[in-house]
Amino acid sequence: MGLPWKLHGDGRTVSASTIVAPDERLTWPRTIGLGVQHVVAMFGATFLVPLITGFPPSTTLLFSGIGTILFLLVTGNRLPSYLGSSFAFLAPIGAATEIGGIPLALSGIIVVGALLAVVGLVVHLAGAGWIDRLMPPVVSGAIVALIGFNLAPAARDNFTKAPVVAVITLAAIVLCTVLFKGLVGRLSIVVGVVVGYAAALVAGQVDLSAIEKADWVGLPTFTAPAFDPSQMAVYLGFLPVVLALVAENVGHVKGVGQLTGRDLTPLTGRALFADGISTVLAGVGGGSATTTYGENIGVMAATRVFSTAAYWVAAIVAVLLGLSPKIGAVISTVPAGVLGGATTALYGLIGVIGIRIWVENRVDFAKPKNQLTAGVALIMGIADFTFTLGGATFGGIIIGTIAAIVVYHLMDLIGRARGTDPVTPPATDDERAATGGVPVEPRVGAAERD
Image (cartoon, rainbow, N blue to C red):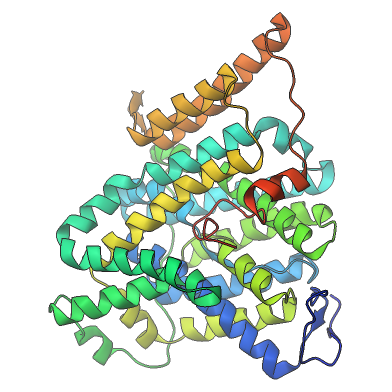
């Protein structure tokens, strides 16, 4: 485990030419402060997911903390990461909840987590090369982009319920991003939600009665999953999320490796496995599924502190917050208008992060196979193409994902056989860094400036 951590220098300062490595730490007061900073960085996105899906916020916070501890243990305390709520699950959770409520959605989360854990074991034993072959950048970028853009109608619905508050929230997010540098700029979503919440309070759109009744300390609400073999289409709708989570975790490992100057590729399988098991645990107890967070990579890049000790602090703080029903009650009072403004930005960012994958990997859109792969997948995802087969209904995300993989590999196979599509070497890590700054995983917050 590498515990305890070695003290970096005098434990008080970090020079411009060095970083605090994962197996190092600053003094404990400073490490605790950095841990709390990581909690603040993940908080905005993590609590928005349960608000959107109807899951208990306190339960989500509890399992995000537990998941982070599990991640650190599985990766041998060598890969700094916080596991927060995943936005990739929003569309399939919404579809499952409409059919069978939160218990059915939780069973879908468990299926995805179990599959991700299996993928992690395969990667650990066989390497990650097959992932790059199955999902080259044009495919993975298209999948991530269509997941974000497919959610646009949900953002619109909340936005129109209280358009004035929604505009105030969105404007605060945009202005905070461009007006402030460092941590404040990175926390634009949190700032926007706070400003929007204040506007909603003034407008009388917030019901505070639940906050007054909630206890300061207590167990969160636990919900058991309910598996239904007759809802196979629902479970199939969750499968594209596995591909997005794989891309997220691989991107996280590469990004942190480049920032720390270490080859962390051997930890890819462990990261995937840990995230999968964490997601399973969350699904069993009624929390939101987890994923690695780009927001926290931004904090590490800004502070030059990559110590996993800070993440242990963050995880413990998240667990404590999860054990406060009062905190959960406050989060649950965020009104629709605030959600509408925040999700308009967030869902757009998810879509743009998919596009950023193309930019960082220098995808050549002069090639017809790349044009059609991205174009067909995006149209199917954004328009939410829906097909019914044998009583099962498949939505735009799964249809678009299948289309991206099939179109690319079919055109690639035929192009190679006919000699009409010369092979282009993949972009190197240095080339990706030159086009996109610090490589980060495809999830919300990663598109903010580094």
